[in-house]
Amino acid sequence: SKTISMESSKPKVFTTRSRDSFPSSSMEVLESSCDVSYWKDNSPIPKEDLINNIKEKDALFCLLTDRVDKEVLDSADNLKVVSTMSVGFDHLDMETLKTKNVKVGYTPGVLTDSTADLTVSLLLATSRRLLEGSQALKSGDWSAWSPLWLCGPELAGSTVGIVGLGQIGKAVMNRLKPFGVAKFVYSGRSKKDADYADGAEFLAFEDLLKVSDFVLVTCAYSPELHHKFDKTAFGLMKKTKHTHQHKQGGIINQDDLVEALKNKEIFAAGLDVMTPEPLPISHPLTTLDNCVLIPHLGSATIQTRTIMSKMTVENILNGLAGEPMPAQLA
Image 1: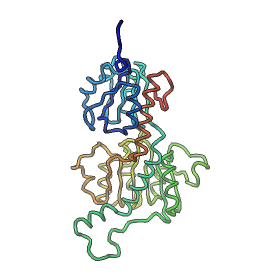
Image 2: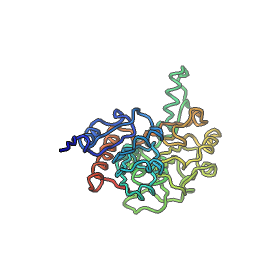
Image 3: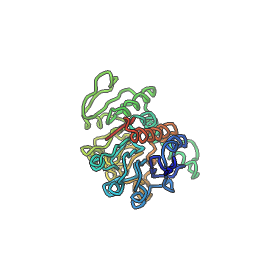
């Protein structure tokens, strides 16, 4: 009789980063049911290596940095499940995945708190010029106290405009209320019901820019929003603060933003998402004192990343077992 080892009978899963890139508890769950292999580094896997490693695999655990296109999928004859540890899925060729009847999982609805916290942090760091102050101290530019040195606008009594009052936008608004904001306004595809808006006033995009002291971008990218913030938009704004937090780059015309910041058309900008990523250190935005740049840290809390990895694993295990995924795209 023929003997088949337990290990060889397990479904085969390829993970596109090294094991130490992920919370160990999540990977232990995956390893208990599957034969799991990993990319050797905590850095994006080259496409050729992804093609080679996905062959014969039953499932793929991937990230936003992995472009899973038709060429990759055509090399994966046994593939049954793709699970991405992300909310966005532009990196996945959904059409080909559906054609091949591959189940697709993702991780929505778990980033709201961490992203809202980060948005408020970025708002305060930018408006209160924290990075400028830290750099001044470290470079020896902190001399005697001066009345207007490193002053910025405060939230108390201000009008805050939120572009996209979705889950994240609403969570940001709730966090800002205790700061004494006088008025919240928002823009978007449609007016929210009164209970959800909770006192925030719906305005056209252009009107929001005119009346807001602080403008927060908390909507996801879509083609109609491409370069929504351009030279014209910046010209409508007060000398204000504008923070940018969404799932994809492209909403802000960065060349126009550079000019607006250089010419002091707006007070400052804070960006967590930009184009391209990583942003080259030679990019003009990196040279401006009134621009705070952070490397896409919206969901970067230990708790949120642990939940995301756990959901990614559950999507794989349920998909392979023929059961509903916690969050299924296809």
